[in-house]
Image (tube, rainbow, N blue to C red; front, side):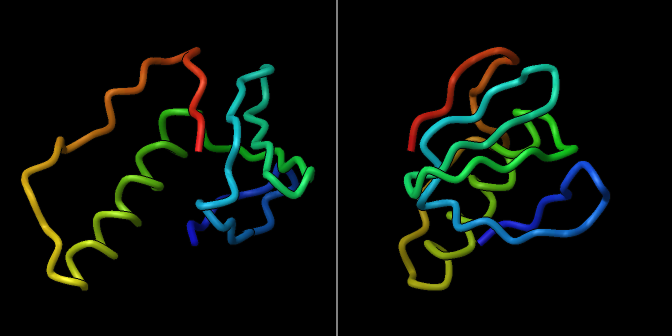
Length: 82
């Protein structure tokens, strides 16, 4: 799970495996496979970085490490599909 911040500045934990789409609208809106939508203060790029960091931590904990990029190759305005 990744920690993000709702627009009202409340912290929220999001299951990154449920993320289907991240949009900038201009708010960042995360669509989950459950149908729920979460608006957050973080940019699309920040959300992508947190997902990559979380998945890297899981891989490391299970001994599945391999060379990876330091940041995801996601450009502003690009869609992120789960």
